[in-house]
Image (cartoon, rainbow, N blue to C red):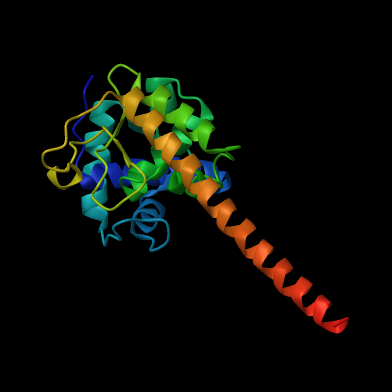
Length: 221
C-alpha cells in the first residue's frame, strides 16, 4: 500500500514512535501528551503549533489506515493512542529509528541520522546507517529514497516516502540514479570527509612538532 500522509499525520506518527522508545513509561500517549509531543521545540523540523482538534483529526485518519489505534484499557478515564508500524511493517529497531527521525525532522544526511537516532538506536558507524537506509528502500512499497545532491554540498540527503516528496527536495536537471548507486556514492563521500578531517588533524600535529623541535634546537645553539 502506498501512503500519502499529511504533514500533521507525519508529525503525529513520528511523535508516537519517538515517545515509545524514549519515554516508554508514559506510552501510549494521551491526547494532551501527544499534542505536546508534536509541538515540542527540540528534535522537530519544522516546529509546529497544533491544537487538540487537529491532532485528533490526524489520529482518526491514521487509525483508518491502520497505522495507529486507540489503546486505552476499559477502566481508563483518559483516551490513549499508540502506533502500529511494527505490526504493519515488522521493522527491525534500526529501521524504525531511522524512519522516526525522518518523520520528525525531514530529509537528512546519514551523518545527521546517526547522531539523531542515538536515543533510540546506537549505530556503530556510517556504514550501518547506510545498511538500514538500504533495507528501508527495498521494502514494498519503498519507505525511503535518496535525494539528488544539492549544489555545493558533499553529502546526499534521504527522505521517507510515507508522504509525497516536496518539489523543493529535487534538484532540477539532475538525473535520478538507482538507490544503491547513490547510497554507495554518499558512503564514499562520508568516508572522504572523515579522511580529510584526519589529514587536517595530522597536519596540525606535524606543525606543532616542528615548532617544538625548532624551540628545542634554539636551546642548544
